[in-house]
Image (tube, rainbow, N blue to C red):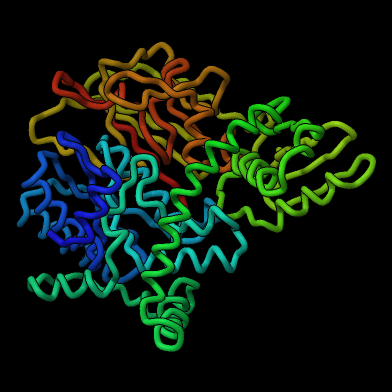
Length: 467
């Protein structure tokens, strides 16, 4: 086993005996090598592997990449799962970059497989590139961490491996992999760093530049963990009121803090109110601290619909809820009662003028293959209370079951954790059984309604969207 991989796995206790691990495999060198290494490690530590591949439908080679990964899994005798998604279209709908949309879909799909850990192939070069990008964007201390070795259920066993070491390993064992031609284009910020700037650093400054940047990021990871714990204590002391769309801070308590702790606390508040931390920069924090030092009442508008209002004794940070972005009029509310269906029956409804829903009931046979399409889902028919089944928008008290133990999470907390845009939370259609959400359409389904060994009948639900 590669030394760097073993080091990361052991140092950060990434995998425990008995774990189930899903590996994101695109077909590129990093993910292929990761799969091979984790397959080898599973001979030393008893855990199970499965593979997820996202066919992003962007490049002409996308179908070839899917076939390559599937055949590799067949050779290794590892379960293979694939989703085919128009990532570019999803990026347009979600108002984000193609890269970010693809990342969101991949993680959501992998979590639907119910594994304990998600393994991805980020390596030392990726880490160094991310640190440099964050430095240029002005993300401060947290940006210096780059990519964390372990982040919730996500593990990165290649964090101590360089790109060249990974490719050399594959060459040595004669393993082929897919090549993404877009990686050679300097139209993307990360590619400019990888193709132009980092080679200059290596040749003109220090050939071990990447390794030194990565080592510094590792130190910052440990420092950040310590600082976050410290700031949480001050957060509890300074926060007067915390709601879905606003947080109120005691100005007197905030003023007493050291400048660094004050900035970190404000950054923590901003992170709670905004969907993506990478959009928050040191500049925004400094703008807030500046108005805190001024006399009288002051207001400040920040990007991402953030408003800051400083009074004589309070600092209130609020996310504006524009009616056209989130709050629905009575006419715009979705509330469709689903009639009870029996075996062989189907039903079709319209969520809006372009979004249609089709349901059908069928028997579960041993040969049935559960679909892994974002807009086609199977549910255990016999677990549904048909008297309350409907398609609607969210309501107070909504919840979703998050694991096979029956643990629940409020829909609000789920949307916050998944970083679903605030402006989209009220508009997302839901398939609901009373207050229990079967499916946040376009996102995850409830663990409770998934098919199991005792399932006999299937409710298939399919969403079609007109272009």
